[in-house]
Amino acid sequence: AHCCSTVIVGDQVGNGWVAVDVGDFDGDGNFLNDANGDGLAEIVTVDNRFLYQFDCYACSAAPLQILTVRGGKVFDVSTAPEFQGANRAWLKQIEDNVDPAERWTSMGYLAGWVAAKTRIGEGAQAWKDLEAHWDYASDPGEEVCPNGSEPEECAKKDRVMMKFPDRLRLFLDQAGYRS
Image 1: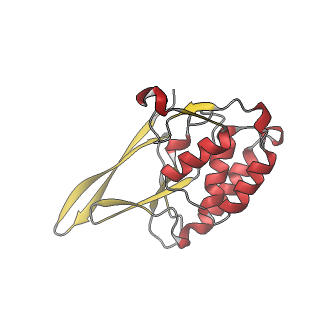
Image 2: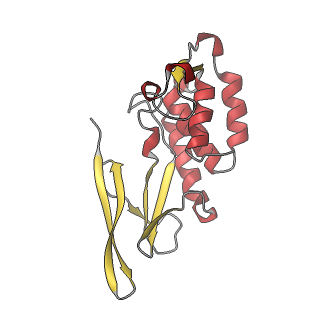
């Protein structure tokens, strides 16, 4: 129900131009933004892997994703120090938009929040807060494949039941979000 804008960037490489397929992103465009104030636009969106991963689309939060094109190649520069201000501002938006009653119960929100906190160097504290507030007793867990594949693509004997914080840790680790 929610989909895509295809982003293709023309980049001068040597004496010619190349079309660089940056990818398909949620939303209707308007991805160019000077996220670090240096006068050059970056491609600014959210990490689409978070949308629907733990909750419905509207219930999901996602960390900022900042991409640039250099020499005909796409680079994810989201964690570069010069983008800390943009990541902090995005985290504030995520926190301001959550219903206070759902702050510690919405898996979609918490996944994006922990990832955004990790991006600004506050992941360890975010994990402590999540683990202190998560209601493990009412979390029935979900069957997952520990290698990150979809459960139906994983042999039944290899599937394990994991509560949300463990599933989130696995997902974030596989997606490159390390505290």
